[in-house]
Each structure stands twice: as structure tokens, then as C-alpha cells.
Amino acid sequence: MSYFISFEGGEGTGKSTQIKILKGKIDSSNYKCLVIQEPGTTQLGNKLRNLLKKETPKEESITYMSELLLFSAARSELVTKIIKPNLKKNNLIIIADRYVDSTTAYQGFGRNLDLSEIKLINNIATQMIYPDITFLLDSNPKIMSHRIMTKDNQSKNVTPENIRKDIKGSRKFEEEPLDFHNRVRNGYLEILKSYPGRIIKIDANQDKNIISNLIWQNLQNKIPNLK
Image (cartoon, rainbow, N blue to C red; front, side, top):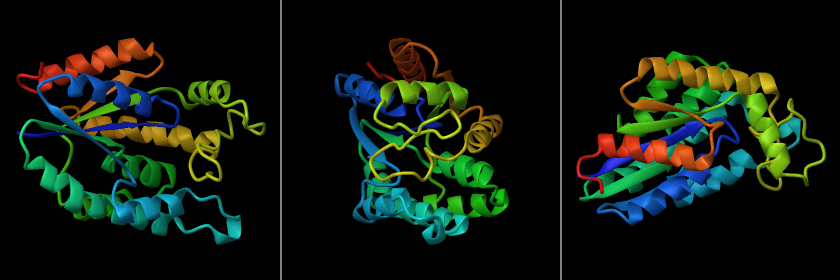
């Protein structure tokens, strides 16, 4: 049997770090591990990722609804070509760096798009395939902005209200105002209320080793015979 888990959270909460640590632990266990990225992983997903992350003049920016549909197109491709086939394998754990909850939090709560429409689009794009476990790394966006600024001294225009450029030429979400990131965080907390059995909230302000141990303990509790 295979399992599907996802990592969610705002900018700078340490998802990539924890995914890397967890992959190492799974690779040393009796399970195999496959890490996927959203949007990304597939050919279409990578093209759409570049488009969605690309810095463009304001007059050339895509609409929020187009943004939602592009993310969903990338997800649909990922589900059909990567997730579904691999879920048929034995002793495999798929780790997704963001998945459907990101769309609800960012486009729904962050962009203020209609949540009922987003739910319908999400169901279509995912073919109703949702993670068995979701780890939500949670922190106050203002705290995370200071963490990012400490790590990225090359960006001279960064303030707590203007988060950062994640990669060269990228501005889509990292540079949204602090109010946007607060709405995203509140969105994640609302999603948690709806799916308390699936989503595990972890304080992202803790030491990375404490966080990784909590993740591993929770995973062992959820997945039989994970050693």
C-alpha cells in the first residue's frame, strides 16, 4: 500500500527543509519515497510554474481567476501522470510540496476568490484524490518575514510588509503585502477546522530538529509498520 502526504504553510515556514529531512528518514526505512512539487514535476507543471512565478509589469499580470485555473491545470496533470500511477505501487510514500490546500488558502483566502467555486475546481483537478496526511507548518507571517530577511541579505528592498523574492525574477507571492500573508495563514487555520483528521498543525518557530521529530512521530502513528 502507498501513502500520500503533503506539506503546507506560508512563505518561509521551512517546508523544503522538512521535506528533505523526511525524505532521508523514509529512504532509510522500509518504504520508498517520491517527492513532488506543486506546481511542477511534470513538463506542463514546470512550464506553468515558470509562468506563474515570473516577475511581470503590473499591466501584464494575469487575473486571479486565470492564476487559479493555471495552478489547477498543473495539478490535474500531476494527479493523472504522477500521483495516481504511483499510488498503485507498494510501500511508497509520496510527499507533495504543496497541494490543494494551497489553492484554497492563497487563491481563496489570499485573493478573495469564491470558495465554493474553488472547491469545485479543486475536486475536478484532483479527481478527488486528497492526501492521507497533511503537515501544516504554521507561524506568524511577520516572524517568517524576519527569518527570510536574515537568510537573504542580497535583497535590499525587503521589509516585513514586502516579503521577498524567492528566486531571481520571482515576485508572485513572496512580495505580496503582509496583509495578504495574514489572510493566507488564517485560511490555512480555517481549512484545519474542516479537516482535523487529515491536517496536523506544527509550530514552525521551533528548532528544525524538533519539528522533524514531531513529523516522524506523527507519520509512524499514521502509517503501519513504518520503521
